[in-house]
Length: 191
Image (tube, rainbow, N blue to C red; front, side, top):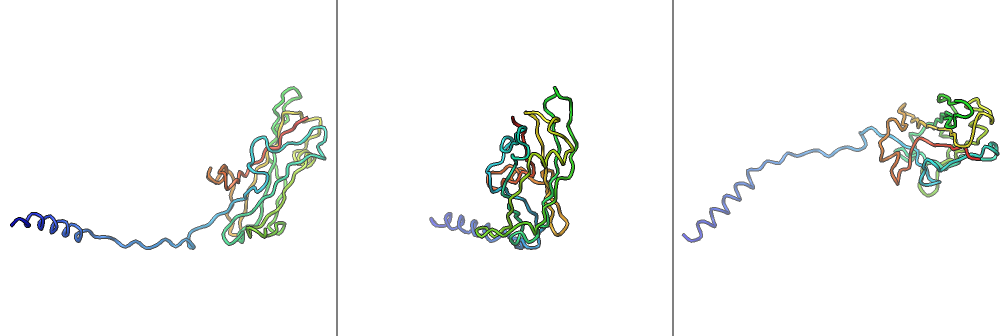
């Protein structure tokens, strides 16, 4: 009789354990999920608002330059092109307002990228001189002053028709310490 309470507790625990029903959930098939991509800035790292500048005194000889790596599934197999647009922001009202709307700068096809031996992803060095920025925005050296800036936005296009930019990419990718894929580059005009 003295074991009856212990036996009842064990019996009750056993009934509770066997009465629970577990549904079997199928494993997610990662390969059937839609995949995206991003353009990782390898160097300089990290990219900030003051990373790139051009000299007003030497627009042809100064430039924005960075190494970009196209990251998509299968070591960049879905990568088609990286399209850059540029606009000028006049931050010095003394010489008038010459701010422009975004205009196409260039499209860099996947064929211009080469596989990196270490990562296996396609990489390319992308550069934009001060003169190229002026030409694309249809401005002259007299139109810009120290303190103004050029803003370059990018769109990564994939072979499946999908496109990625800062507008449809999460903050972990655009501003994250590892991914460093802002899809936006500021080119500051300095003396």
